[in-house]
Length: 304
Ligand code: CP
Ligand code: NVA
Image (tube, rainbow, N blue to C red; front, side):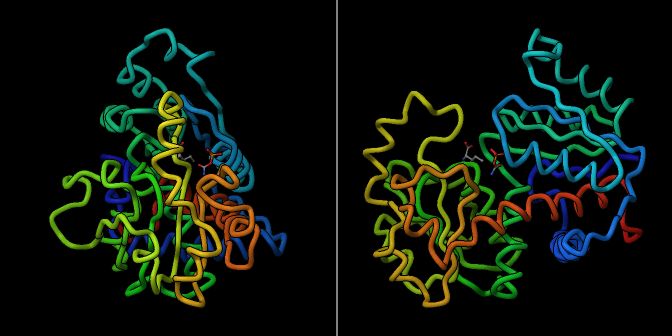
């Protein structure tokens, strides 16, 4: 049987994604109440990191431990992947030994190829074009604080990066309007935007943020773009999320950032630390919603 994967958000149908968000909130409550929940006893998650991480590594590793299982960290520096062993071979070998694999890498194609040869579920822990686990945490967090996101307006301010591209998919799946505020020459491609009108592109950030219920941003130079950092700093300067920009949003608007953040570049310290900011809950929810995801992918939920 072909395993379920989370290569992008599109891998799981909307009702399943919504169930995961709800389950994430339940698991958060259980964890806060100190209730042990160990359905993955004896199960192992393999984690391949070709890029740095704090949240993704710790949330998956702690999550597996809390569920009664364990996780193995692999990096190219200390595995045969770094010495050129093909992804297809690594996938076939690892998936005979572990119950699921999480991969953080550069090209999305690496995740696709790994999944094609894996006998166990594969989770995308970030690629150059997607960060679905972060979207699950963002959606869970918004719903916990403001209720259903369907029909709401979300404005992405900044680079049309992996997070932004995952927001486009989420808008389509969850039924919210997405506005993307970015310099014209950094706009997402028409292919990334899709044929429908779920996302619109704006060069005026104040106009894009007007009346929004959620304002989101991320770094201007993602991992792998270090050489472009100075050029990007100049191009994106008018797109900083600050108190003045937030004043255009709905009075109940919240702010999110997947972190790590560069204070006073893409967001001011005032907004990041301010009352509208949900970034700490957002980071914590990586743990809870990924536990829901691991439960679902490894054990199934009986409805498939
Ligand atoms: N948001 C996020 O994925 O953080 P890390 O890079 O620390 O994993
Ligand atoms: N867009 C950022 C997200 C980091 C979690 C990056 O890819 O570096």
